[in-house]
Length: 232
Image 1 (cartoon, rainbow, N blue to C red):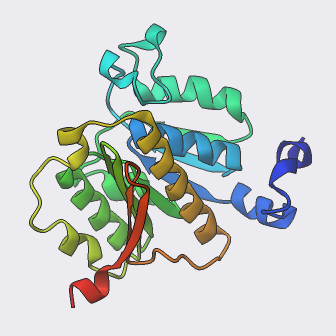
Image 2: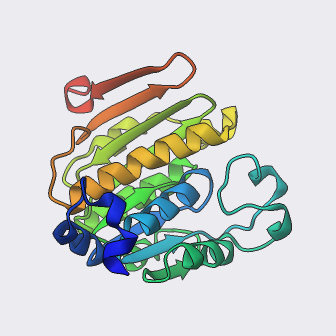
């Protein structure tokens, strides 16, 4: 079953590398637009354990973009909806669902077993808590955010202060809450986040380490910004 499940990966990811992914643990913080797609991509990729964190429930406004949102499960906990779908996709994965809001008190405990963290949050204050916990645990984080046609991805080295500088002058809400999001932006950015996660777990160098990939899907413009140089 193992070889058959990942047969179409093998030209890109060897069976030995697939075993490395199976032995890995990834945390996805937020199971909405970004996190829903990211967690399913991780499950299909064969990540052995997933820590999935979200305290929220599915609303009708989620139907336009969130993978776990259906007309029949409005009002359901996102963590419950995630389990129902992901366990059907890959029952070999060990899922740890946390129906909690990430905060200063629980962040380190929730993330302590992760090899890498995917940031799928939608507020600046929550991201600051996440980055602080990752730094304390010396665990890298793949940041992603979206708004309308636009998105960004950044591989965050826990030893750097890139995220603190990036968000030091921002308002509380992320751009996703101001501009709204179509499904293609969410799935596009999530796929890049998971690609970066996969590369890290397999020991491959990231081109986005402390470099911000900015994506404009309306004009199909993709640029990278070296944040270390930008901040001196």
